[in-house]
Figure 1 (cartoon, rainbow, N blue to C red):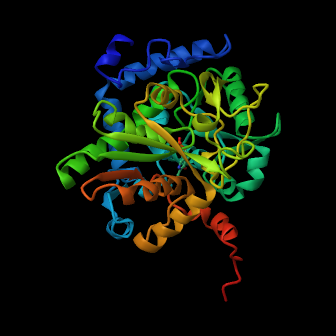
Figure 2: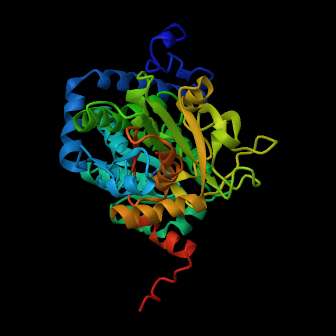
Length: 410
Ligand SMILES: *Cc1c(COP(=O)(O)O)cnc(C)c1O
């Protein structure tokens, strides 16, 4: 890959799944054959027109793609600088970008003859998207979820059950997302023959980070066309929120070689990146290590114990970040910043009031960074932010944070 770097940022990963020093396949010997089989099957599907024809059909008729590219006029006037566009992936079926990727993996699983799908989920969004597509295809779905998260995310647990999925509360370790990921990997090794492991972000062992990125890249591909139609050119700046980094990679990837396009990833700063790890900013506040089968930046203590982190947004609480982001950070092609809970809440409210769009708390982080930089940029500077999820799921959290008592409005 090294030589290609002079020409393109889009050739990665190398044959070992490496993006520079990051990524790879850090898995047990028992898992290795599964990973290699998946890689082979994905490589075949990737160049098969019938695979993409099925994807495109379902993206159009089941998900509702293409999602609109929307000029946020009142927000732009309010900020008084750069022109702000929103890529409206919150309008997708199930309310976020997650389904773009789940569809790809499940179509692949079907090609491989796998009838049982397993997934892990933290806040429950990926679990719901997986349960949804499994219902659509009549596949068995088992979702591993930290016992602590099962309690905190009751509505999503119920959604998954309505959709016919089995939700397995994970009590090992500390009962969090990291433990759910371990149990899902264990399940996969045990049920090799009929089971497909569907990962929800650009993480895990190779080929997952590249595969999930490829499926999410539909976001950036659409933006290239839509922005060209709207403005006759590409945006100057792209901004997206980062949990594991899949919606961001999806927007960024098709633009990596357009060097005039600035790329900014926004991590969850929680209560502030300097305060006792009460944040989820793996790049800005973590250091490299191995988790979930790949090497990347992680939130960890001095002994290398993975930390849970903290954010008002449950969907940003992945303790690592996709390895391709770690690489883009180190080579300087993308810039990574963090936004606090307080700043995200302010952006959440502004989007509601000025645009009539209730955003998820995750993209509220991206919007908060837009609010920081747009006023100082010239009026002909174009920003495109990824509105990757809708906020229905977050209204109770926001009500609590703003001191409203639900039910006390009368
Ligand atoms: C899951 C989720 C995220 C975080 O995941 P990424 O892989 O970083 O995209 C962000 N926004 C929403 C709406 C989500 O559901």
